Image 1 (cartoon, rainbow, N blue to C red):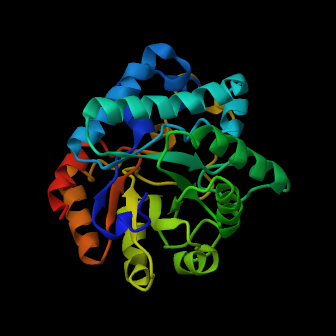
Image 2 (image 1 turned 90 degrees about the vertical axis):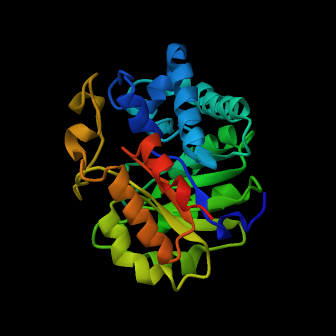
Length: 305
């Protein structure tokens, strides 16, 4: 694909995992969207969600692989599905694209391989690298580029980028920021880009963050010599000690909003205003994450040049 793709204004999708839960997916433990890949009866729901984002204006859809990472499957006694569901996620995204008959790109969602929103990778970094590699290998066929989904430290980026280089595909790097504008590791976004950017980067986005966090770094982003943007979430608050360690703490009815809440103020019109404001700052990569629905994406579709 064209390495300059994101130099023009582009619209991404919203949060597939939460969208599936909002559509009636019954989660098992903390499998969340991965359960929709395991259960064949839910495959059409995945296709339909992708299609609704596409029809709302998304030019890029991300595979539903955020909770298909090996550690999360192990935590839910489901590791045996690892290969099957990662391959299936790409197939379902392809089906949605083909049904739409639109020129849509597919991003292979490659999440952090330990705990979400945490910079603690543990001591076995070789295992982290292996898990990145194994998931990326399953996603590489049928995608246009990789999307590093919610990276929480420079080290996590370094390991993931090392893996991606072996597959000769470009990458959109998604960095998570806390509301103070720093990564969970304490690092700053500009330092991450300066240290780790390579020729495979399509751009960098602030991933699964609040509008407040983006506003804190808006001026810093203007100093970057790379396309940038965001996938905003509509959670109420992500605690700094947030962790998903056991399916037992969530139960079969588990939903991230149980702990993180829902920012009901971030409706479609408010989302539109934030996106319009951030575009004036120079953002060209516009999208949503958890609790951002097709109706939100449709609201910003008119902003595209």
